[in-house]
Image (tube, rainbow, N blue to C red; front, side):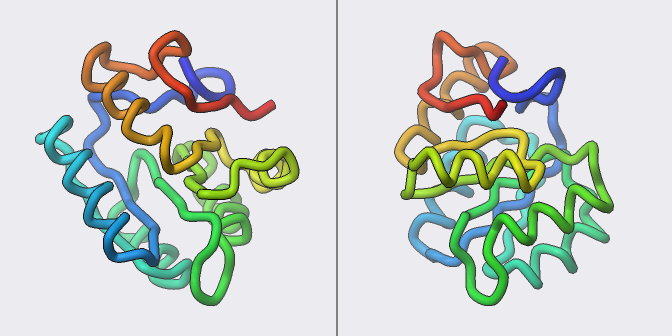
Length: 143
């Protein structure tokens, strides 16, 4: 499994929140998830503030969070989410796959850290096996 402890992304999850300000990538994420996991309810937010509002009503099983967002950054939003909803899985998605960002993501409480280009590999692994599997994915654990 990818991630800390028992917190893995699973195909039996019912609600996912995508937090991404890039309209093209947001649509790609949504379509990819829906194609591979058709029974999942996918909501979207384009800012951290919008994400915090939607979490209260959606109560997602997992959140895919962009690192850079308008207003607050994804790490600050992740801290707030984890303070109120510690069991919600947060996956940081970024184009900036740097060690200092990985460490900052871990410090914010994120469960996973993925470069955006490895996202599709992770989704393929989930839809194939039911959970993320280290052998099928380029994603990275957080310490």
